[in-house]
Length: 311
Image 1 (cartoon, rainbow, N blue to C red):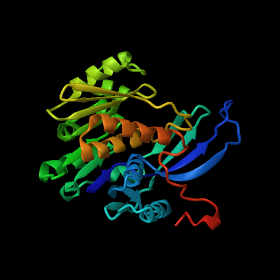
Image 2: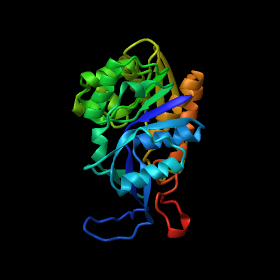
Image 3: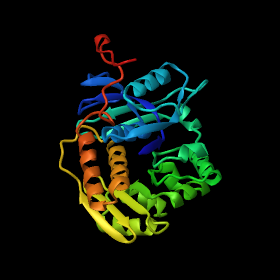
């Protein structure tokens, strides 16, 4: 199976084991600070590789030390990075991930070179295309590639950015129409359904999520998937609802759990078209990521000198 993943490529600076009583302005010790490969596209790629798929990564990094090192790391992990653009004059995207005592994560992100990602019609000639959250310009590029090329992708799985669902433009609507699987969290689903900001619920009830999923379907056969955090996830296909409760796990960090869930669901759905099995396997994948600090299961990019992890 030919798989392509498009989306953000970043270096994540993960500070784990933050103290409970962290005070702004103070210098305090944490458990660890490590560099990991991250971003929605990389997190999804890691999950797909874990399932034995060969993945071509589409995105952009800077032509800087971090970008070149990150691509070398990904090559060593078995990712096809030939379509990753190395852009001079732009910095590789970065994120600072601060993981709190209960696993809650605050993320400070700089998009950098990711804002300049371009998708071409030939990029869409795959069996499974997974679209991680994209900025406005890359989403427009994806829509144009779709309009100017006859995509033979057997399955499109789309996990849009908050910016896309908050103010859906023509480009995103084009991609939304084409999606075979549309994945959202509860807040994003309410935004896309044009629920007024003051009425958006942080904890969306399952019944209400099911109604939203049915409302957000754009065509027959389209699967709409809404994740609900600790409650679980709702899936609607042709009006038929499915629900899978979340696993009980000791949460280290919430970063990347949604990426793992959505990528695993897309892969399982494409392979078997069994909604119950796909939901169960996606939930298991998400639980695995919740039990670790980083957004995917790969080792840090830079460890001690003797480890040889940093290319």
